[in-house]
Length: 257
Image 1 (cartoon, rainbow, N blue to C red):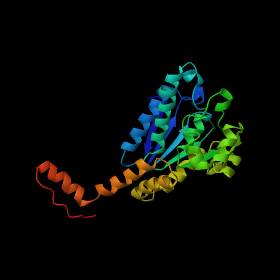
Image 2 (cartoon, rainbow, N blue to C red):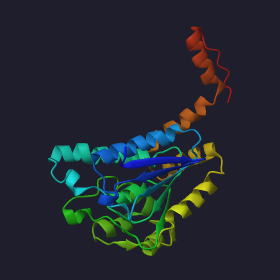
Image 3 (cartoon, rainbow, N blue to C red):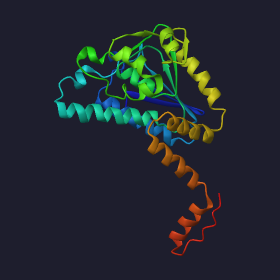
Image 4 (cartoon, rainbow, N blue to C red):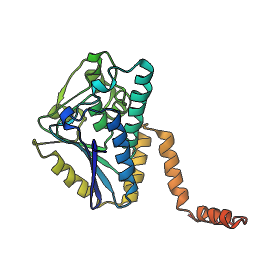
């Protein structure tokens, strides 16, 4: 879909949220496009690292008020909040490391989008914040969950309760971003970082990402089962079990790792 573009160059995939006339604010179609982009990138075996950025002068202004402002409570909770939460979780759990190149402001859902990445590189001129309570609503795409786990409760309180907006430099001191670069250079810096990551073992990267998620209390059940499934899939026992089922004979397991 036009709202999210995917390009692949060698081992690096670039995901660009592309609704610049709306400061890359999300509507339902854009959420669907992001989910499709995740599937597309993950299906490419050659991709070892992904970059996420925004088109135009913003990274993302979050959710488009026109997209959700007229929804009834039930539709808002399910078709908007829960669906968006699932899409952002899909992004956060990509098998490969994800680097966010913050080329512009990341506000509300835009910051929740950036928080789904493993590494965040921000341009010096940007602002970061969670302004939802000024609209009488709460962060709904893991702003009070993933952000607290990754950045700490107090910094999230300052944004949600106090309405504080942080500059790129302040965000770096608080751990919200990992590096600050000059205006117009976030994507170049992210690509250089991605090229470095791509030289490392892809299996080790994927498993390390899962292990870090477990240690940080992020989706422990899915991460543990993914790790276990990957390990079992590498064993001779699994191959023998599948072969025995196909050939309709008793399996001869050897416990080979």
